[in-house]
Each structure stands twice: as C-alpha cells, then as structure tokens.
Image (cartoon, rainbow, N blue to C red):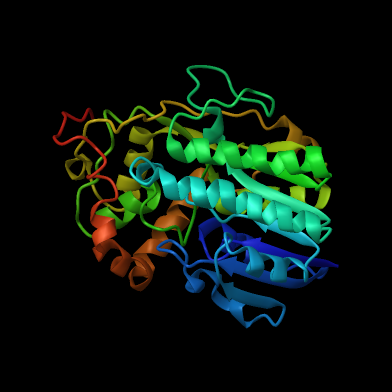
Length: 340
C-alpha cells in the first residue's frame, strides 16, 4: 500500500495528481503539504477533501521539523511544491532559489533519514533552455536561461545527488507546458482566457513566435503516477507528447473559443530572456507505457469552459495588486504592430 506525501498538492498540477491518486485502491494515505501562497488553494482539491485518506497540512517545505514529522508517516513522496512563474523569477530570484533548491534539499534529506521507498521530483522542460532545432533527451546538458529554470535545474541536481550519494530512490520528471482547469491566471492560457472573458485585451510578447509544447495536466499526472510506480531510481523521464504551438497560434485558438477576434490582441515588446523554443524527446517514458490521451482542441475547449463557468474561483484573483503586475510590469513599455 502507498502512503504518499504530496508537496504543493493544493496547486494546479499537484491537486490534479491528488485527485487522481485517490482513485487507486492501493493508496491508504495521502498527505498534502502546501504553504497556500497566492497560487495554492484548497478549493483545487474539491471533493478529495472529503476522502478520509486525505490529510491537509498547511506548512512550508523549508520547515525541517514539520517535514521530518510528516515524512515519518509515509512511504513515498511526490514533490510538486515550487515557485514556478518565469516573470516573477526575474524580480524575485531569491525566493525561487530558497523554495526550489533549499526546499528540495530539506525534503530529500528527510526522506533519506526515514527510508522513503519512492521519491518523485517534478520538474520542467525549461531546464534544457531554448533549442533552435532538435529536441532534448534526458542526458542533454542543462542550459537554463532564466532564474526560474535555473532554480529547477539546481533542484533536479540536488534530488539526483541524494540518489548518487545516499541511495535515495529518486526519479525526476520533466514535463512540457501544462494546461487545464484550476490553473492560476498568471500562465498564458488562463491569463489570456480570463482577460478575454472579461472583455479585455491579451498581450502576446513580440509577434507571438515563441514555441511551446502543450500537455494536458491529466496526461502529465498520468506520467507522474507511472514514474512513481514503475520508474527506475536515479533516472530522469521527459514527459512530452503534447502539441507544439506558437503563442500566436495558441492565441488564435483562444480567441475563437472565447468568441473574440484579433481586435482583442495587442502585441507588446518581448520580455527579458524569453526562450524561443522548447522541445523534448519522450521515448524513455513511452517505453514504460506512457501515451498522452487528451486532444489539444478538446482540452482547450474544456479548459475555457471551466473558466467561463467558474468566475467565482478566478475573478477575485485578477483584482489583486499582484495580478495587475503579472505581465505588463515585466515587459518593456509600449506596443507593437501585431501580425494577424
């Protein structure tokens, strides 16, 4: 039976994983440890909060005594907790390093002391940096281009060092961009969707030429569960297989789903250090059975529909002082002609 400590389990991806894993009969306990900063919300867990196997703990992964206390009650760890937004990392790099690097060290050290049997560290394709061509495999050198990606690359290496040095059974997953319901409106899909639903303009950087691979959050969680169960300790697994889109093409799809046209788009100068293209090979995870199941167009329609019908969940978040700075304070001032 699995007794799983899930860090960051009230966040976007973590909450989807918690709801997924609680559907399994061989899971006897799930403890969510979450600091409930701006992007964490217990409402993301929904009816999972009613499951008697779920315990929610409000706390920080940097709190070593608390982590030790919780670790002693579990057999596995799935580590989602992280500072995760590129724009914020440009002005708040210290907090990214503290949470992502030192937080991972705190968890891994405690896991080693308590003999944890499985430790899955959840990371990102951004650690490979921008690729003009080709795709990154798990042994591609890391070339992070922004503080967020650098902090995740460092946390990956910290986690893997605990396998090499102490034998902690660590696996690392690196996924492409996730999307789906419940995502905090700072990432591009919920940001653009909520702005369009409120009759506001959306603001691609440059000409929207940046390429990202979009993977539904449920597909990512399926891959993470697969690694938890069948991953080989010490290995890294790229979780790709979604759909490559430029930000411009993504914007066109969101405009159509929200019933808007190109008049709702204003391009702004590119932000500082904006990687042009991410791409990963995912043969290793495919070899142990991973296959993305969600179609992008259907997934985007479902996602937009969720934001359309749940303004009580996201509208208050867009009226905070932080929300007003999400994109425009990071980008250089001014507008550009935006090709249609």
